[in-house]
Length: 320
Image (tube, rainbow, N blue to C red; front, side):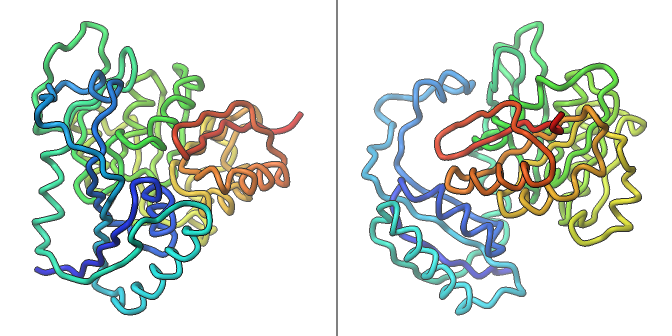
């Protein structure tokens, strides 16, 4: 099967901003190609050896390959991407700023990315390991999370996921009952349960995320009594919200995008216990104030804040 593809020729500075905007218009399958060398921190965090004579030379250029769902119109998406380029160019250099069109076979982008997904150490104890990789130099106290995202979002390598995990870790205790909205591969819930949470409920609007989330739970030896995973839309389906339980969660986590977090903030209170915490990530820094205002409007205050590159994550609680 061939998929329609739009390639954006841009700059490395603009990649994160453009990626966020692309997600906003419904393009969830993207691939970034650049020549940015790994930082020493990234090299240290990975169980791979980077040879000096194979390090790329950063020329500031990047390509973003956008893979379109079959129901997306190429011309319409092309026009929307042109509008995004114009908008983003007002606050960051976008380089060439051109697009071209093509096709690709499904197996090219569904499977080829696996060669770039290597074991990744998030901190002193948490290690993310692809199911097809072998982990070297494992420490006795490591918490190893095995992941095969399939077509779902969530390998643990993106800044937004790391920030969300950092905030989530502070809230986990033995009896924590957590709700993971937009669970993707299930990585946040798996980590929560591995850290000692009592139970996790996962939801995702995309039916393709449900099978890999379940499978990843089983790969990590998490029994069925510890989790549930449901496909549904908490923003549009009130019956679905009721079915998840009201005021029953110590922790709600959402690593999505600001434009989804903002409306989610208006209903998250119905899920949280009185002293519960709302850990959110996926917020591009240009939308941070919008998120904070929405939290304030719905009775929440920011308890802590974390940043990495252009991304912001927050932990919120009810105002006293």
